[in-house]
Image (cartoon, rainbow, N blue to C red):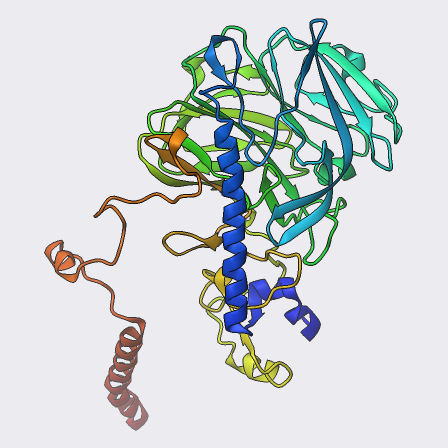
Length: 479
């Protein structure tokens, strides 16, 4: 490994960091976190104003409208009994979180595109205008429809040329959770963010009525530090993992009520990876896939749902405990952002000699990661423009060192009047903290000695052992 590789930024996240300008960097980081939280939570507040279960009931049976955190719903107009909508495929100046922007592609100025909501039996007429520099199509992923409306370039239609508009029209006969995306130059167009969800509400709902209904699309991008365009040729090493094309702390929290029935619809159009999404503090049932409803007798309780790429999964639950609960992909790499890879492991290594040599050319150099990687996101160091390497955010207790595909499920007694920007206030005595020595003794628990004392004890043991072995050595010599 040459010096350039050793100190290049993404490598530094794994093995080395230049620590400089402490106060200024810390202030910048705290300000960025505050801005991110404010923006994401402002979006959540706006979503709360449109909250389902209150005014926006759109389907039979009192079913609420779907909330797409950090997203939008496509407006549909009723024209002679047909619901008409318009998608515009176009470049998008997208913000993953404050401090990280990219030139993506999407629909109607956003990635993912707006969620399309319909009711079983609706006839949809969807216009698709192409403002890209190349052709495109739209495939209605999972929908049973006439073959000529399936949106596969070359097979069922020619691509939509730049500057032109095609019309798709079909009846949604089966309720469920579906998606839409291009089937022309998929590698580029999907990788740059062209995707969206299509929800078909049933005319006769099955199971208990839900109070909240959310849509979250998982995705992954390759965006090198400082770059402006995601790399659509990346096939395996993605470094920006997203919910609705946002990363924490830019993800809006999901605000729900204790005792309410909540539905979350996950879609995955990631180019390569599946995502095991884990919710803290509750268990749920998977009630549907993109193939339809799962009979109640076949549902089972889980705390993690695997969402394969090209699929949807729908979960439902009733939270019992108030609080701010983490929800994240359980692949540890997927809750990091722009983390460097391919560098030698240094955990447990003595790097003092390397540090001394590196300081000859970089006086403030120090190797990081020898004692683990926790807390690196909050370290006071300058970062390149347009990057979020290993970034989390400042939380109410300390630094949250998860990022990427991470958000918060906020459970409140009165969610409709709650401030989505506020953190949960824990009742006294309900937060984990330092153990009481007297309590530990009473419970028969002995804390391990500090590391320094353990080393001293080990050195003493070694000295005693050598002393005991010494006479035998002498005796052996005498013989």
